[in-house]
Image (cartoon, rainbow over all chains, first blue to last red; front, side, top):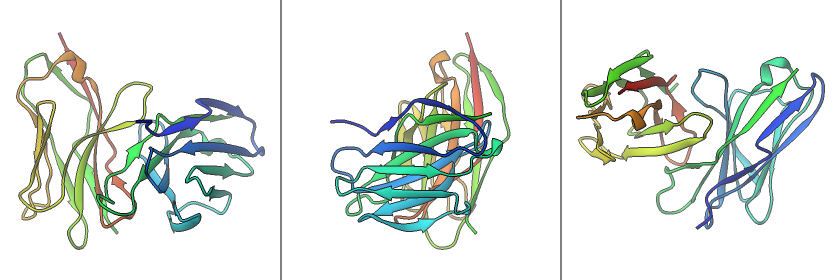
Length: 114
Length: 111
């Protein structure tokens, strides 16, 4: 049973550039959430996708956008990168029915902005 | 809004010591409560959960009881091991919404 996978593992970008991070949910899961974890902090909710639509959004600017595909995989896009966007980006998947509250996390993508 | 407060770390203990990491929450309604663990260089792993008042979650020797009267979900283990060294996060969720995390507590166990 494949768990949540994310790519790439690490990424280094320059200020002003754009980045795309990818996530494949756990087998059978249909909902994907993205979190940003700054160094030494707890994860902060960015947004959640279900049925290819953004269902809920945290307090992040419009530079952060996402997409969910018909196979439930998801992308996180960040435009006009700032130094403060350096963080571990975590993807979590869950199932809309059943134990909806239980989210399974991937290993994360470490983004460094220089 | 919803929030979670954890005891500040870092926490350093000797092997076989008793562990308590305090967690309190603020939320409307009846959230589900979780403890996640993060090992160095890795993502988050669900350690245990409780979905209603007085539920006790347990896993790998760790326990936590959902106390609605004190809005708490303290993590305990009777005898810690070096392999328990990690960062522990308390979190809550309402419905299928976002997880709200505490700031994390770094635990180091010395042999």
